[in-house]
Length: 354
Ligand SMILES: C[S@@+](CC[C@H](N)C(=O)[O-])C[C@H]1O[C@@H](n2cnc3c(N)ncnc32)[C@H](O)[C@@H]1O
Image (tube, rainbow, N blue to C red; front, side):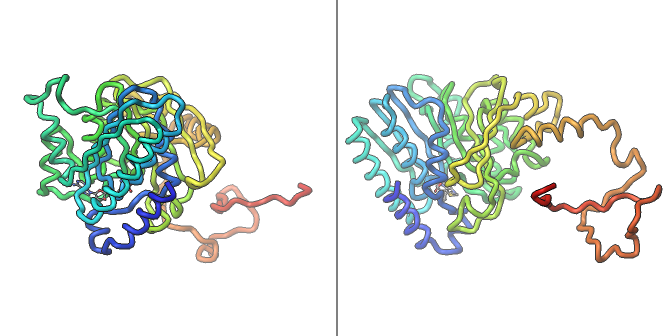
């Protein structure tokens, strides 16, 4: 993985800023890739076929290979299909895959790989055509690992109309990649993807959530507390999450939520929530509520006991910052019947002897 990470850094440095922005080429650092690869539940099958959609320099597939090679029970055969549209990255991908082939040979795994330098969505649609579907010969994968491009797609773009053909209306390419990869999994196949957290709520992603949660069962979600550290070399500041899911129409009873400061953090906090707490069965928007710990869960439970909305109480809310020095005229030193507390959003440490 150290060797592969050097390839990733070299590839990132060669990408022009324009290409990096247009194709959303933020390559996954080795510690994040390793954390993702270790999240797969099942790796002891005799044959594994792995899909990496938007493979970049191959960090994710290499981390997956590293995990397989370390297992006691390894597959006999491994097939990897890597989609990557950028010619420069394809050159690095070849190098990564030949390092993987050497490692697999040492571990007694027969590796066969294919790099497809074509548009993933376009090619996936070809593979998904119902008229061509024959369970014996059609290409379906046991595993998929992905860090898809995060680009926005506008109304009249090609990806938007291609995704419409499989029933998905979305404004962001990453949702298209994740849903399409889920469709390409065989039954009980598994996927691990890293993406912005934005798909969990908001109306733009409602369609995606409905389709995705009907197709695949959510098993684990990993949250990073630090926004800066996940893609530290590329300055990606969005909130990023990792999802692990299994291709089953019925959701499981519970979802594991884990949290760490960054991928290098040895301390991973983890707890399980009933699936119905994560996605409320009656919620038409199917919001995915990710509560990182028991304390947040208790806060939500208390909030749910409130029987009125703020407007029911005749109040309005301003969401801008309230700072005491700009509100001096309203401040009182002593509370009275017509005052409310000014609450500071700050953690304070109590004196030691208190
Ligand atoms: C966010 S990067 C992640 C790369 C790699 N998976 C990793 O984690 O390091 C997304 C990759 O998808 C590629 N890509 C963008 N659009 C694509 C498309 N339509 N088909 C295939 N690959 C695409 C980009 O060139 C880029 O390498």
